[in-house]
Length: 183
Image (tube, rainbow, N blue to C red; front, side, top):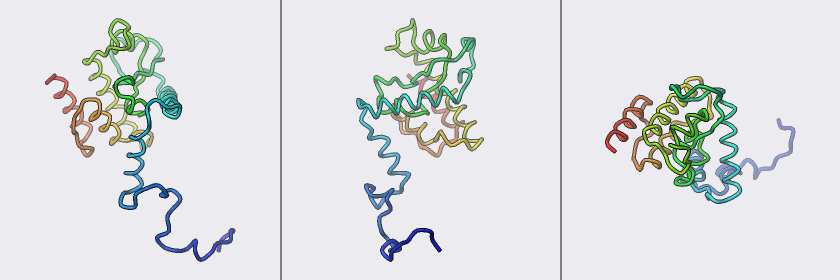
């Protein structure tokens, strides 16, 4: 029956699962994971580790720039936070907020005049649209490192919006264009 010895108490129904020890019983594991991701303290070594891990993951996933424009010439070496790490530390470790760019795209378009503390909002929209395409393609291939819900969370947090997670990618892009054109 089993290689390991087990006891009657191991079979008891409604016993806390080890994954759920600190989770409220009224919410699902997925909801608890989202809540715990959002409660990561920004100025900790653990958060810095998560940010670096996410950046390395994006580096491995893409050999070329995710944004296909006239500045995409050359090797894509830069990982760019679409919503800046300094203003949105809670989004810094999300794969959905990171995009691979060439040095030219990063330092002349995303950050005008090589000033990394400023953001070109027009190019931010370009990056969001390109990231939307990357996420959609990955999900269509059943590659599970992205979540549309996390992308919508990043948009909602970064742009102070209330988009619904059940929107299609086409609807998300339309909403993004509307948001940026209204500003």
